[in-house]
Image 1 (tube, rainbow over the protein chains, first blue to last red):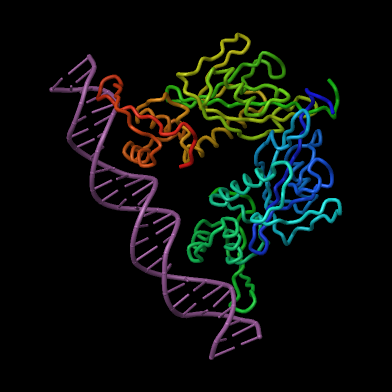
Image 2: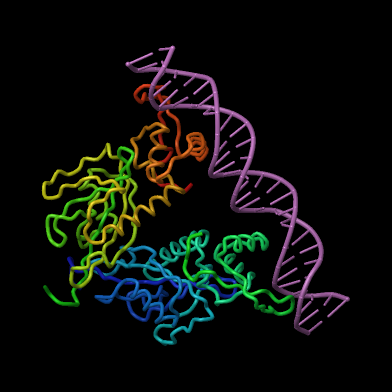
Length: 217
Length: 217
DNA sequence: CCAAAAGTGTTTTCCGTACACCCATGC
DNA sequence: GCATGGGTGTACGGAAAACACTTTTGG
């Protein structure tokens, strides 16, 4: 292994969140190579020279999920994730939000991508706990003042579905009436004229977001 | 000039803000080398292999101002600032807040560091406008929910001085009584038993911050 | 004694929260 | 007709915003 003065390893990492079965989940892959073989890790890879960070992050996201045009933004640049590589490392981390229904996980056998609940994480490689914790914090903050949830739901959805997404991310229950008042008065969603039945019970009105961008509230 | 597949240039850049004469100002240096010779730029330099980002940013800050132990945090990693260098570039930008009274600008003649009002910026190199605009946005947001102002004032200060700092950063006037109530009820500052006269008029009580860290409010 | 800056309370408005009942549909 | 989920309004409390006069000092 060469000694010093190497170029740092440049990697681009994307924390991909979804809401599934009442859980906030992150996509992880099982490492098939050293270091940290067999541990789970946030998807990422080397930055290709000439490629922009956004492009690299988008490429990773599409590779893993097949999804594009979702909320994706830079999170933080870590210089201390990889304690192994000589010459140092820089990891430009991002985070993305996807609707699990739109996702097609790549079925590479050496890769084994899978969703893990943020409440039951496996043993992770490369201090990835730190990255996930930071991503979660940012997501929770962001949810309070920007309509990022558009990325976690189908184009049309019921208010109850939207509320479940908020509750799952924030980790606490919300009041139905207050939630509806807020969403509608902020004009981040708009009723359509369609309805959807959820099992028994009165069919719910379907709504859609007024904007597919994370506008500030 | 070599063609492609080079390693990207890795630079660390620090937007250094201060409040001076009722203006929010950023420290800029005049470039003495190409590219963009003669234009003004945010201080920065190459990342030294083996050095952490925090260390590099701190080093730049101390080099330029002589100040340490102030508010300094990572802002964003840009891949598109330098449109010239082959092989691409990554600029890990940071921002810092300093008390102009504590600063000793380095007096290198090829460097000419100087404070510029954010309201009257000169022509800048490398899309630095974008970086400054983003730093200002983050600063304004941060000021609302974290006590970052500790870094912009002497250890002891009057409430009026503190209010001027807030007004300068936010770009609008604040109500004296409401401001005082808020600062004191949030317990981010504490009265000392000393006073300071400001020209004619009744001398003001001096206060100090209860914490020298950017605690969330 | 007058100019200059410091200091101080009350009222109103707005937003977040708490809370309970009727409605439409499937079975 | 009953179980299931959808949909609605009001009252309270705390924080932010609006607002004007008195106090202390220097000259």
